[in-house]
Amino acid sequence: MGLFDKWKPKRQEKKIDPIDLSVLGVDMHSHLLPGIDDGATSLDDSIQLIQHLQEMGYRKFITTPHIFWDMYKNTPEIIHGKLQELRAELQARQIDVEIEAAAEYYCDEHFEEQIEAGSLLTFGGNKKFVLFEISFAEENINLGRAIFNMRLAGYQPILAHPERYEFWHRSMERYQSMIDKDVLLQININSLTGQYGPNCQRITERLIDKGMVSFVGTDCHHMGHVQLTHQARQIPALKRLLECGSLRHDELM
Image 1: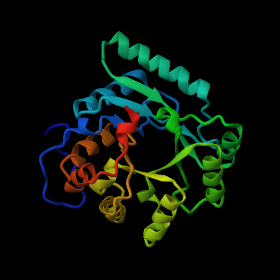
Image 2: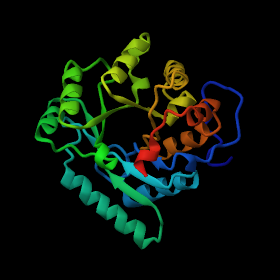
Image 3: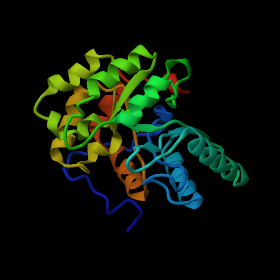
């Protein structure tokens, strides 16, 4: 049995030839910095994940450790320190890859304080992209205010994995309302495999087919996610996404 053989999509469909992810070039949502959240646990772990993702075509990583003040009290100083540590190890092992770091912010009071202070970690140069997530249980009561204040401060919000917020599954209008507020949507590539359930997979495909997706990320935490990314490369919905013209990964190179 090969490395990827045991990871099968939960909903079977006709597979296509594996897509070379160099067409995306950049993975803009991952947890590759060692030991600071629920992602990579060590430098060796980080390197292993990066090398496997490289083999699928990624040339650049914008890794996004959690900043969730109840669990992961990461700061720009902690994140940049770990980034330099990982870059040094990649150089020592002569692994040619570009890696940057921002964050995946949880929409809480601390996040709003950082918006007000103008201290959010961004990517995409002068685009000032900010990746953020909300509760999986219910819509955050401060969501609208946080979005308004981000835009007022000159940030471009990107909502992480909107397909995973089950309380929106019965209302495509909620996704459209995010876009109407100038929030870009980023899906997880692994959602296409059924990893998060058939409803999540269905919503992911609907967002793709409606041209509502601006970014696709691995949200890679561990080798299981790498293996599922490999599976997603053979799913027709990913090919449709890459061909639909809505993606903005070229702004990250």
